[in-house]
Image (cartoon, rainbow over all chains, first blue to last red):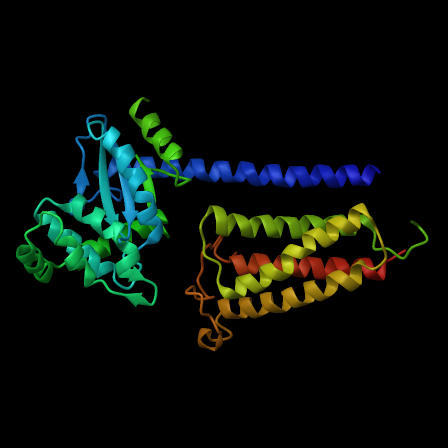
Amino acid sequence: MKNKKIVVFSLLLLVAGFIVGIMMYQYSVDTKNQKMLAQKNGAPFVRDHSPSFGENQNSVIITEFLDPECEACSAFHPTIKEVFNDYKIETKLVVRYLANHQNSKFTIRILEAARVQNKYNEALEVIFKTQDKWAQHNNEKPELLWEFLSKIDLDMVKLKNDFNNNNIDAMLNLDKKDAYTLGVRGTPTVYVNGKVLRELSHKELLDLVESEIYK
Amino acid sequence: MNLMKTISTTIVFLCFLVASVATLGSLFFSEVMGFVPCSMCWYQRIFMYPLVLIFLINLLYPDDKLFKYSMPLVATGLFFSIYHNLLMFDIIPESVVPCVSGVPCSTEYINWFGFITIPLLSFVAYFMLFILLILGNKNEK
């Protein structure tokens, strides 16, 4: 009987040690990231080439690593949009790319062409909303996007022209390098002032953003 | 209980600790630190994880068959870990290994003190279990 007590006790101790280990690790990563954010002009969270939105009056930087062809990114988009819209005066939203799918680069080039016309968010909205049509697994038809995008107020001739002429390789490479530095492996990965969003939910994101705004 | 041929409780308890630390450690590397396990690591995990429960059950309800049930798992895991370490030390070339999950099995995620890698930790765990079980089986009461 005494033995069983020792066994149960050591089991609890192991689990407790594991949980403490997780918390210590996460704390050290957050601390390291915040230091990086403060030191190098925001890098690797912010880069000059990245699309960014908001007035950032409270110096709260939301960095989202996304891939237009990623289903989870599409599913999470309304959430991040909603939270950001509530706090666009206080915060800044920076979009970083991780082109992990077959047509990601194609789609990102369209997005960057739409950005020239100041229609980035509108285009992103369309791309995500129609994702189930153009990004079906094993049956991808990214060319459908031209038709979907023609329904919003875009100069399609200019869009195609900008699409054909933009070169986003350097940008994608730097985004990828920064993702690697931060240990980002999937999309969407969201950071708020260097703190990683641990659960992709509305409440978690709102809590994290508000805790940075009102700290 | 003394009438049964059992491996001493202390040894089973040590085995339980080794298997638990190895299991939690590997989960920490993959789930917390975000290292993607390569296929070799998966095979070693497959044979390590059940050992935690096998040793635990044996501690709570001792019987005389532990060696029979645990040794095959330990020996198989040990085999994989030796193979994996030979890969890490470049004794077997990587191209021979059927690695398809995107992470080459010779990827070095950690390197503590210049020689401690994850496959080495796995080998140490399996080797300790192997020795403990053999010792325990020899000295069984």
